[in-house]
Image (tube, rainbow, N blue to C red; front, side):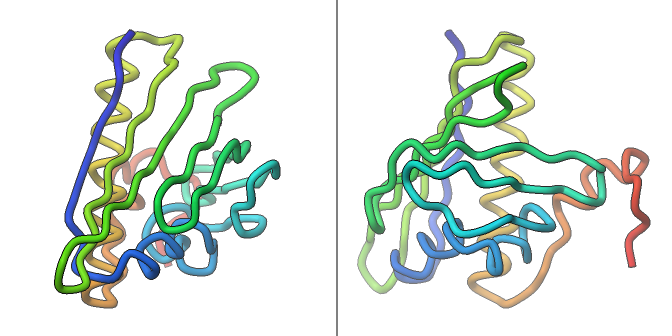
Length: 150
């Protein structure tokens, strides 16, 4: 079974990096355009990428504060699991790893997911380290946008 994987060091404390994926007010600056609420274990939270006219439900399976987030998404048609882990490093740095598995589409889906999560981590790094909204997700597929960039 293929597993998508991406990883990146972000030069911010683990509490800040972890919170950036829990709190949609922060995440919307670098990944999705809108989240229905903060991630909480046992909750189902809708995430929207309005620029592409798509959404998913993040079914939050587990959260370990500042260490791990596990969700199931794209269900029930094409469910897979996504796990982020956060490792505090010296000097206020955090090593983030994201894994995605359980694909029904096989290797091609894993390759696409690896690419997407690499963009996510790069965008997160830009935003958290420099306060820049890099628009990497928006600019990835400009011909697929349903809402023009403002």
